[in-house]
Image 1 (cartoon, each protein chain N blue to C red):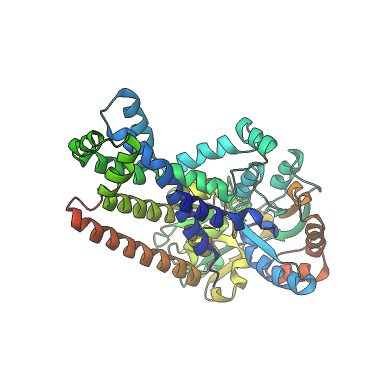
Image 2: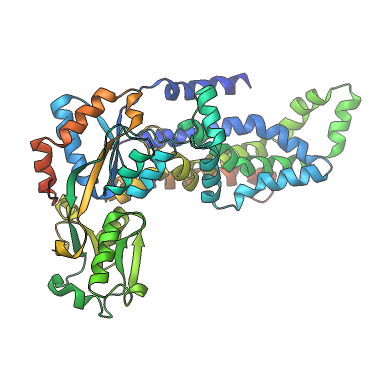
Amino acid sequence: MDLAPIWLSLKLAFVTTAILLVIGLPIAYWLAGRSSVPKLITEAIITMPLVLPPSVLGFYLLLAFSPQNALGKWLQDTFAVQFVFSFKGLILASVIYSLPFMISPVKSAFNHLPRSMAEAAYTMGKSRWQTFLYILLPNIKSSLITAAVLTFAHTLGEFGVVLMIGGNIPGLTKVASIAIYDAVESLDYASANYYSLFLFSLTFVIVVAVFVLNQKSAKSPLE
Amino acid sequence: MRLFLTIVWFVLFPVLGCSQPLRVAVAANAQFVLKVLKTDFQKKTGIDLEIISGSSGKLTAQIKNGAPYDLFLSADMAMPQNLYQAGFGLSKPKSYALGSLIVCSSANLDLKNWPKLVNQAEITKIALANPKLAPYGQAAEAVLRQYKLWETLQAKLVFGESIAQVNTYLTTGAVKLGFTTEALIYESQNKKLKWVRVDRKLYPPIQQGVILLKHAQKENYAKAQQFYRYLFSAEAQQLFRQYGYLTP
């Protein structure tokens, strides 16, 4: 049995989660403060992949990064980078696609922290950065883990976007969800079952883990 | 932070560093025979290939948008011709096989008189490949039009994205009747399907064309040429015939 699609899925989910932790935290922190028009618009855009059909996202990414079009051609000519039909492209798409899964729970956790917590830190002479790192972050640890786990799981199941901009290239863009589709199309139901069972089991474990984690903080399971 | 970047680097590095295998994009109807050809070709030359299958229309669109394929085996001549004219090809399209359309059923039906059978209430859905994307779908449409059935059957028709989807509908029993490629029958696990060949005079010949793609120049030029020549070898052509194709 070919394990490559499973490794590729795990790799994609892992890299996407790591990138989103790095860029998602500051965005979530910024969004958590007092609301304003730019924040509202940013949040709307970030939340959109949650409800947007993946094929829409895939279609526009394909248009934007196709070497036939200006941006894609420029990237290709200047940096020799091609986002369509490559693993890099999948990462880029997944980061956009899974953005709300990272940001929403973290933002909401920041909002739930009492303001006095940060203020107390400031009066003790801690900088904004120190306060963020040593006071706020440790206090939202469980939400942070939930967000990371959900991001991971969501990326793992990605199908429409991958099919649109990634195609179905073994070892490069053929992730587990695509491998299921491909196996069914090749009438290889044994392989389809194998990949499906893997995703099914892993998803179950992840959802149980999230529920257990959130039991302690006594909020709704998906917050 | 540093830990994350280190991990990201280690995960990404193998992807950036690897060399490309010979990639062959193949129309869904020919994926079964290609699997056999792949094994035979590898035995003879030691060259491994990766097969990417889908509808000819989808693969053409992918190639135009930069998909890294070295060869394209289409289900028709028009799409490789289109790619050639758009500057994606290294060779003029050449026909490697002629497809054969069949009427196929997962149920125990007597298909000899299928044009009568399709009107019965028992047959609720009839699957064919999307004529816009797949030549086997175009052939099926042409046949149904010849029998003046195209209009009357509209409500029953189910369009698969490629012939592979039609095959899935048939083998899972989701539809009782469908138009597909003869190659399906010779896949070992599908011996139970009932089928009958559609008269070749009723549809334009399904000339399947191959084109060597520009992408091959990057790394795999020699290997791609070798496989291209192999396609027209006596052994390969014999394998095509075993899967129900006519050979040029």
